[in-house]
Length: 402
Image 1 (tube, rainbow, N blue to C red):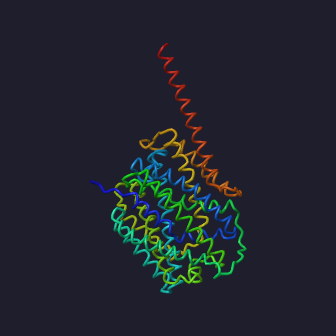
Image 2: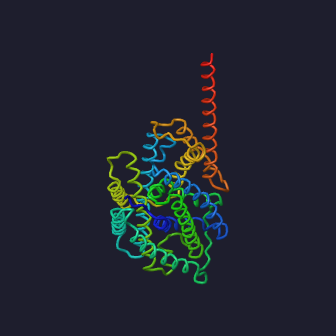
Image 3: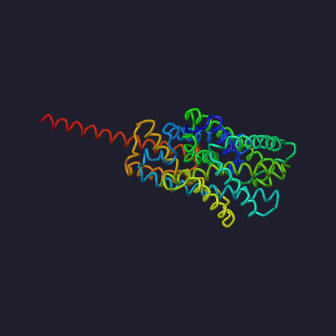
C-alpha cells in the first residue's frame, strides 16, 4: 500500500518552508513603514497570498496531481510544458538565491569562506532530497523543533527593545509595495504546494494545515526581520544576528532554515521535470538543480530578490486565477487537449496587466487586482463560449427538425 503523508507531516514541511532567511530579509524591507503599518501590510499580504496558496493546494490534493500537472486543466499538454519550464527556472533561481544568502550570512558569523558554506548547505539539501519526502518525518521533526526553539530565542532577543536604539531608516517604501512584498512569498510557493498535498492522506485537511502553518510562521519571520531592522538599524541578516548576540544560535538558524526551505525548491524542480517527460528521474533532477544552484551562488552571487519576486507574481498570479475559474467555477478540464489557446491568451493579458499595475501605487498591491481582472476575463470568455455552443446546438436541432 502506498504511504501517504499525515496532516502533521505536511504542517511540518511548511513550517520548514516558512522559517527562512528570505522571509526575514524581505521583512526588513518593510521597516521604513514603522511597526504598526508594517504589521498591517504583512497581515493583508499574507491573507491574499495564502488564500491563493490554499486554492492551488486544494486542486492538486483533490486530483492527486503535482502542481505542474494541474496546469493541464486550464492550458493543455503544451501548457504544462511551458509552465513547467518557467517553474524550473524560478526554482533554480530560488535555490541559488537561498544557498547564496545562507552561505553569506553563515560566513559573516563563522568566516570559513563563502564557497565552504555553499558546499555545506548544498550537501545537506542533497541529504534531504535523497532521504525522500515520505521518509523525512523523524528528520523533519527534529529539525523543526530546533528551528522553533532558535526562532523563539531570536524573537526574544530582537524584541528586547531596551538593548537597542531605534534607528531612523531613510529608505522609502509605500504601503502598497509592502503589501505586494508580503503577498509575493506565499505566491512563490503556489507552483509547488500540490507536489506535497497530492501525497496527503486527507488532502483538504493537509492543505488547510499546510497553509495555516506557513502563513502564521511566515508572518512571524517577516515581523522578526522588520523589528530587527527597526531596532538594530541594519538590514543585513548576519549583522542582525551578531548585533543581537545570537552567535552560534544565529548560525544554526541560518543553516537549518536555508536547508529546509531550499529542499522544497529543489524537490519541486524535480517533480516539475516529471511533467516534462516520464523519463526524467525527479530525485536526480532535484540533485542537479541543487548543484547548479550552488555553482550559481558561488560564481554569480545573486543578491537583490525584489525584481525576481515581481517576476514570479506576474507569471503565476494570472495562471492560478485561470485555474481557479476552470476548476472551482466551471469544473472543466483541458488535460487531454494539446493546448488551450484562449486561456493562454488570457494569461498573456494577465501577465501584461500585472506588469502595468506594478507602475502604480495600489494600496492592496498588484496581485489581487490582477487576479480579479484575469479571473473576470476568464469567466466572460467561458460564458461567451458556452453561449455560442448553446446557440450552435439549438441551430442544429432546428436544422434536424426541418
